Length: 90
Image (cartoon, rainbow, N blue to C red; front, side, top):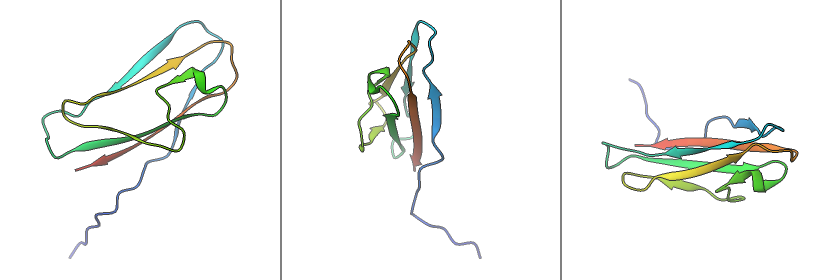
């Protein structure tokens, strides 16, 4: 019989390279249609943290129904990038 675990872990980090091209984007995470589901988000800079708008060092943010989380990626001429990890809770 299969066993289940309530322990949820974050997936591997996704690195967003904020190179020297002008511009940027906003990533918005929203959970919908499942009231009991949430999405935990870790987002941090590995260079100039100003490139990763919404980053909270050593902290996490949670998207839930009606409460989206918006993160900015500023691609400019500063070194480094942003690291994103996600964990779905249902």
